[in-house]
Amino acid sequence: MNPLPDEPKKLAERCAAVMLSGDAPARAFGFSLRRVAPGEAELEMTVTPGGLNVFGTCHGGVLFTLADTALSIACNSHGRQSVAQQGSITFVRPVQAGDRLIAHALERCRTTRTGIYDCTVTNALDGKVVAEFRGHSRTIADAMPAPR
Image 1 (cartoon, rainbow, N blue to C red):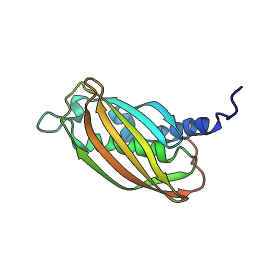
Image 2 (tube, rainbow, N blue to C red):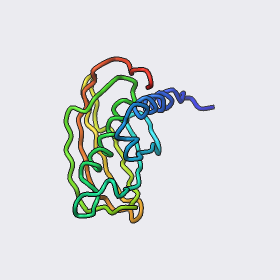
Image 3 (tube, rainbow, N blue to C red):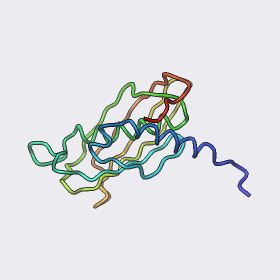
């Protein structure tokens, strides 16, 4: 018998479903949820030609959006409506069309109204880090909105 109930994980899963149900950029870029847990989220996407910049590599805005969406799911996983307050990204290496990216966001600290999250974006084809993101969240309501 498991002495700890699975409720925090189920809450995180319900919150992730809410977050992704109304996120048009996530749908447009083809983000999919790999896993979620309290304070943690992992998304993946395959880079398409529509996500490339003039140099033929993945546009930085696409990478930022992937990391920011992972942050969003992680910071909302506790069931309280939160938004990104600040975010910064360092692009480490270029990404090509067809590459599959994995963004793993992890909560570093959280108070009643703020949180700090780190997100590493890796290329699943070779396991190399392509970007590092740090984001801060702000809780704006004590409950999540209804799914869209």
